[in-house]
Length: 314
Image 1 (tube, helix red, strand yellow):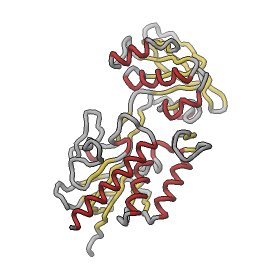
Image 2: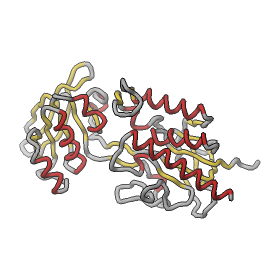
Image 3: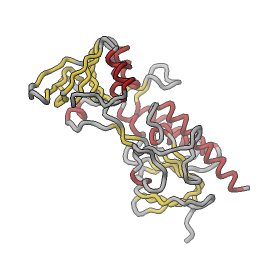
Image 4: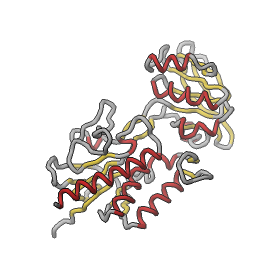
């Protein structure tokens, strides 16, 4: 039995994956999308999305992902609730790429990788308990909900400094918890923190617990790791800013990755170092990490794939 070779397979199901599917399906590429273990991606862990155009009253992350999926399926995208566990990419123009979901082998002329990135957390049980109730890993996504309130940012690098200065504009006070006695952030970012009057930095402090009522954050439990003194800080929001891990492990050794594991794309496009393999969304974007930019790059990836396939057919 000859195996079916698909025109386009999309790996991942966040805003970039579903937008790529909408564009690829409308271009008659008959895309098949593999959702992975977390259908809808990071946005499904976000309760309110207020900054995506077209939703004047806001929308929940899961609802928005269902809307995008319905739209992709309306144009006959086939959605598989399966995880791609292995990939073998061709290095030849016009070569066939192989993917596996468990034991099932999938052959494709083009592949769009939109596997996203996973926010790193500290690993406290309380983080899960209060997720969506005050614990977040994205200030630009959720900062708006803490206008005039007190919040904490955990982290010492550029991401933490950036989140703290962003939140300082919206909130009453930002307390930064830095595990060591120095920042890891760049000098420019440290100066921004130091010149923001409503940011207080607590060096040698770690978050060890979260307290609250009705799954809403009310207090942070922190320890001074020099004196072992435990104290509590009254806050409504806790932002974990210790970085993201792009979901690229199964592609390592084939696709060019940067030092943090993000897929390198040709600037201004979604092209990777492999012909017929494209990358969209947070898996190749460590800078913006927004639903709208992910969706935009999903559109780009589908158009890049369409162009690639059209050139092969000539």
